[in-house]
Length: 82
Length: 251
Picture (spheres, helix red, strand yellow):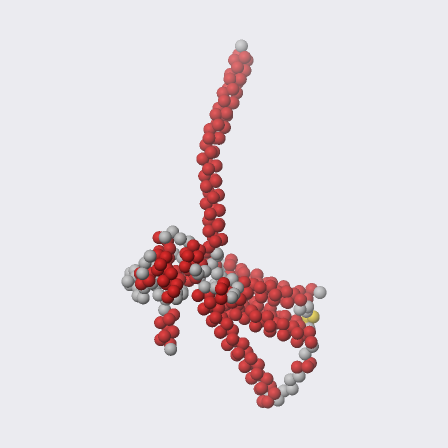
């Protein structure tokens, strides 16, 4: 039970902040496009919230990247996503 | 008359102290815009502040103060102060509004107004509230059981005046209503980010003002030039008159 909880709580690193910057979108604009509150974008960017699969796919469609290119399971020591 | 405002002054002092300690002495609080650095995999940790927790403590302190004033008197150093319950009631009402709106009234919102994360947060708040209320009821039941059957105390609820009982019931009802918001403010005490719309509007306004200033500055040299030319003209005229005068004097 504990193991399951810890794996659920572990933040999944993501590139939302970087991709949002590249797309020159504000948090509000991005939030509107994926249908969440702008606060949630902040939580996602800080790695304080792991999105549902449906929301992950909405990000994927918006940025034109596959889900695993936006959300990654592991991070390297250098801080780059693998 | 003066002592009627003692609780109000006391709580106002606590509010002021809380504000000073939270805002004035903690520069991190000013970072509400939450400008997260754009770095992949180094999530920016929000500063931990006491703002939400202070609000919860204040709410409970005021609720207890209100109930205490309902009983008619508060003894301070053996001196019974006759205190009006109205200031405490007004303060409790104000704090209730502050607690509910603290995190954008998330606990009071219907499903349609929330996204998936917010719905999860709200549901957890209600689950926690349910557990808290359950624990309180179990505690009251246990205390009653101990008082009646173990300590064999005579508990006569009929002796409580109607006004006092009504006040306690109203406070309990408000407590039940506001509990999810209290739990939210306690468990996630950081105020929400300043809305990006407001931040964006402010940035746009700043940009507009800067642009206006730049335009004025652009125009300034022209007017300066005109002014300088006028000055030179005037100077020349003055020089002429001065020389004329000088020459006139000489002649």
